[in-house]
Image (cartoon, rainbow, N blue to C red; front, side, top):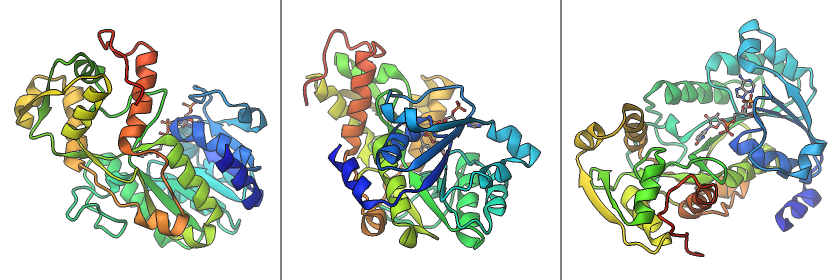
Length: 335
Ligand SMILES: NC(=O)c1ccc[n+]([C@@H]2O[C@H](COP(=O)([O-])OP(=O)(O)OC[C@H]3O[C@@H](n4cnc5c(N)ncnc54)[C@H](OP(=O)(O)O)[C@@H]3O)[C@@H](O)[C@H]2O)c1
């Protein structure tokens, strides 16, 4: 709360539009911005509510919209421009065409456009942790499209734009990427119960989580640091990545267990999993992010409050409390 009060004193009041603001990021970002005194409008289809109740939502204007159909009809960009915002935070832009439509509509409005990308714009890494200057060698449709959007936004001069690249967003209310690099809750159960767990390869590939509130912090700071943020992209992750093995050992320890791990070559490991789980793991291992936040620390004063393990632990505590993980009666230690 102290952090939010400080922001109220420092930030000038802005009209802020958030596209897709009721999900992981928006659930933290919207209350932050409202508490800082901004006038916030959130657009979404209205199919879901934020992950947590917060009284700040009473002060938010909610507009129902289906971005996909309005993009297709060519009306979405003008709808946003007509709102007359100082800043537009676009959390759900997935194609360069969609970004182009928005930028063209915002031309001449002096709006700061802050786009949500992903660390997967990089593809395979060379030197780690890699920074924003590292080559873009994306693979997979998602990373390729996000890299193309980033390239377009940072090259154009019609609308001042900033791109933020989160890692694996984690927090209470949804399933975090687990030590096997997928979303199977059985992985957490096996570690909690002290059962043997197979990990692919040597368990030394990496994951790079970030707590959703730290992602929200970076979006908020990019608005207040507009003069240095425009024309730039920033990584938004925790201070350090974690190995699958180290992550598994930590989770087991939270339940008073010693991790009982065995290691299998990826192909052998994948053959014993569902196609969907194996594919999710493959995507995470093939990226194995280990990402530098030095630029965001320097230019945005970004200071993640959570380590990777702290972010995951909070998500896991929520899953256990919700009865979603069978721990065999074991409780998470107080930490
Ligand atoms: N999840 C991750 O680990 C991760 C990692 C890196 C980057 N990212 C990036 O994070 C961004 C997503 O942020 P998030 O994780 O906070 O989102 P999220 O939890 O998936 O929530 C999506 C938000 O967009 C709304 N929405 C979805 N489809 C819509 C549509 N067609 N028209 C209007 N609103 C729509 C949803 O509400 P309704 O359903 O009610 O419309 C909700 O408010 C993406 O750009 C993604 O690439 C995510």
